[in-house]
Image (cartoon, rainbow, N blue to C red; front, side):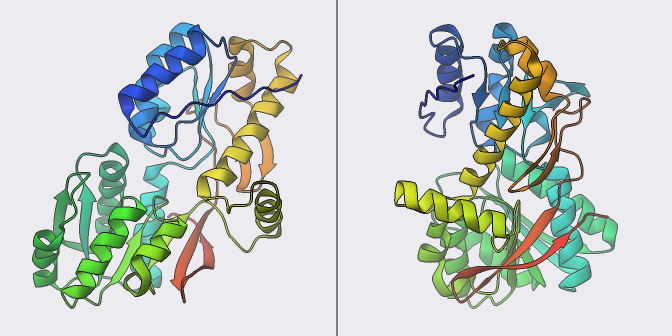
Length: 314
């Protein structure tokens, strides 16, 4: 088969994501969809996919509800990334076992599904490991002043501050934390990695840690990064690596599907077992998530993302 890509911008908006998927399935008659990125945009498209019988492979949408709701797998929703219960357990375990944190504070975006979910799973696992949550503060997407919440966190003197949201707000809140004299280690999830985190966060994010889907020093990752830059003249972000592997998933499913229709492709996606640049991708037919995918711990050192280790949740 020859793959033809049709791209639309969902503008990071849930309703626009729904509109785009309607257009792709009803007008463009696609046989599969890759994306959207955020969980809040990937969750509401499920009914449209099911009605049209078109599978979707989410790239960095890590909330469990993207593929499973109330214990039932969504027949046309798949993903290439690990999920927030695992990511939260990895972050909590690394904070407690490796960084030695015993008191943690949380700052999260109450208006975002991804942030809410990752916060929940970090809190559950950090407590289970024996740690204490000394502050649990929230903000709403679009906020730019985090000082009131950070001041409350500062008063509790945590060992670590977990920030499960995206890079722009991370940079803003990190700078404000440092302005308040807070020296705690900052930690986050896969919403962090972006060139903008470094350019906007600067010294405020130095020494911070985040959970990631890949090791930037891996030879396969380096090779793809170089080829991408040579072709497009810009560096790929995290999403680019996962989209690459989502395409590999789709190609593998197409080869085994027998015919290029949505139902056949969805059935074949349930038995994907391939090696991508982000790791081994073996899809569970029960959850439509990759099983046993490694998480990488990254530290920001001198403005660079430095791989620390692969870390498995307990």
